[in-house]
Image: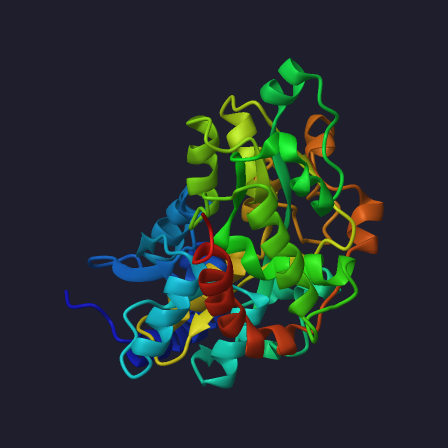
Amino acid sequence: MNRIGAFEWTRLRMWGSLLCVAIGLAACGGSAATSSTTNSGPPAQLVVYSNLLSGAMKATIGSIMLSRYNTEVVYQDLLTADEYTKLVAEKAHPTASVWILDAAHAIAAKNLGLLEKLDPKVVTNLKDLVPSAKPAAVGEYGGGIALITAGIAYRTDVFAQNGWAPPTEFKDLLDPKYKGHVGLTRSMSTDTLISMAKTNGGDEKNIDPAFTFAKQVVSAAKVSVFPASSLAFNDAMGRNEVWIGTQLDSAERAYKQQGGAVAMAYVSNMVFSITMAGVIKNSPNQPQAQQFVNLLFGLDYQTYQSTNGTQLPISTRSDVKLPDALVPLFPTKEQVRSAYAPDWSVVADQQGIWLQRWIRDLEGKAS
């Protein structure tokens, strides 16, 4: 049987629902959710830009999509900047149906007309998200699935061997004892720069103080390692190239759970980025994409994230919470409340320029 197009799928779903009303839900599988499922024929294929989160998605959502919606999910783990570039390039003919971006990139994508509105009749779990997971500038085009932040990751074994106190602020990166072993992660440059700017008298509207300070770090610490991603940062730590540096907190926790001798210092004025999800405009299999996004906001995915300690859950549901053993690995509630909240619309306009400056003025000037 040929795959059913989005229009035909929706029409059959409507007729199936009417039939259930006529003959009773029991004859249709006992629930409205089951009645909307098309299980005959080969599965549809849903491509998801999973933004390095495919592991959690496979563990929680993949089997549900196949059993409930007869849909096989194909994951493409791309860095945020690469995913955004693909979204822009494929605007007329998208190959993927679900996007995962930070708030700034989501706003930029919305402004370019790349995002589809979420269907409130399908994406019912959106109501369970904390208010900060639904930035006004994104509106009805997406919602948050986790909070992440950049801090200072450091090798606990190296610090213990040398009797060094843990770092507490960005200024600690200037300490000469770390010379040659400081890493600055490019993929977290936006959050890092905003936090550095705020700490040094600026903010997202005045980013120059951040670059002034970062240049001092590059010069004083002889920085030569600028990992393109958080995973590359962990690899550099494993090779003993990096003892301390700016890193994504969820990547630090993942490395620690793999046995890495690492800890995270949460600095003042830290910025929490919102990892967001939504549907790509004009993409194939839109009904299934809406269902997939709804599951990202739902109990299974949010519970998995909190139980495995990868990202800070963003659901208000009382049954989604961090296990007691993992609480010390995350920022405290007070740290979350006191974090700096930038104007993401400004960030969306400026982050591309900041990245160019980062590559030119920091990586390009490193010795």
